[in-house]
Amino acid sequence: MAIDKELLDILACPKCKESVRIEGKKIVCDKCRLRFPILEGDIPDMLIEDAEKF
Image (spheres, rainbow, N blue to C red):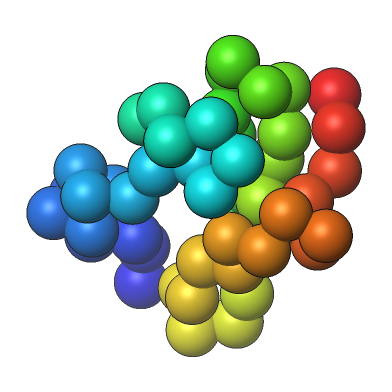
């Protein structure tokens, strides 16, 4: 199963509120340069403290 396009369309970066994209098993904000993990069951973890910088 993958993240539904409708869900991706409404997701925004919790830090800057910009749109995000999927890259592998991560949700990516190019403006903040943060990657948010996608947990088992395709649940996006959009907590800033769980994100990794790139």
